[in-house]
Length: 327
Length: 126
Image (cartoon, rainbow over all chains, first blue to last red; front, side):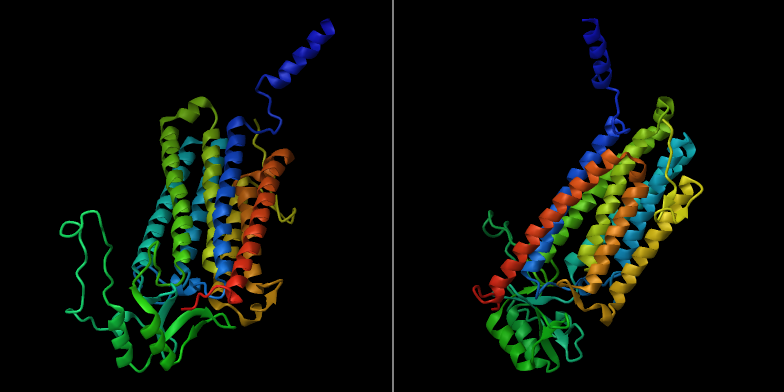
């Protein structure tokens, strides 16, 4: 009897809490498991992007031609530089975060405060950059024509440089249809902004400019977009042109397949939301640090836990960067 | 609890004196990798356009470099290097197994749908 009691007592010591078989506290371990599940969510999105891309592997937009802008440099072709900058900002804020964690281990309150502040700053710069990136993407710059089959036709000059619709199409004011508004039409029907030009106007513009050709989405052997001959170009616009597209939204996308825009909005949006919530959590922890909550507690483990989350956000961005902008 | 960090990276090739120093070292390494990626992405050297195992060599390089970056972020910034083997395996292998499985299935299926379009069962070019 007494032996069983002794056994039961040692059992109790193992199972009544406080035991850490993985040498990690409950909170930290659960943060790791949350990260695993969140990583699976993100890889679900990225794999779905891969699915759609493989489905249209011969006509997918080329990222270098889509993301070519840099703030304050108008008309300069700068593919990827801005995303590279964003990546660097996020990695940098990851570094300040890990420095804050390290300062926390040494119970150095002032250093933790400074590094947490820098981390929040980096996060805000990143979210702001992403907003700018979305804005340029939504506005678009060249415009295109969508066909009946949903394919995108873009315009190039004989040297292969992209040509914007406004450079060769003139709008005929008399032909333009007024935008439907629910206040003077059917109140339960709404309509988005109408395109600046109609397909007919684009066709006239194309007929008037001998040097402009149509470029389809189909990729050639060398991984470039196919440019049609002059006759084929006119033929395509005349027979198949259905809608003028400027910029991108969830329905249409002047850069190519609408799926590209959908995934861009969804994946970078979901990631941006993670960065945003990370910034909010960091701010809460930042104030706790200032108020001395963790100093009184004698442990800065909370900083370590949000640090894990913050690094995870950086980790995801590394993959988004590769699969959206590089590959 | 003592906060001991393993201060070696590259399998002991590089050993840092303090954790802070290691963080800066890893930052430099990650920056170099990112710069290589961006430079390759802008130049796109012709020699790397050959197909290796069904994908361009350049894309393989990008993916491998990404995994290298992910490794150092997880191991040194998230301190996975200092966790126990048990926790490390639970987190890493679960993720890797499920993600590889998912990628295989979806890409296989995407390729199949492409062939259906490509061989003209469904017309898409109009």
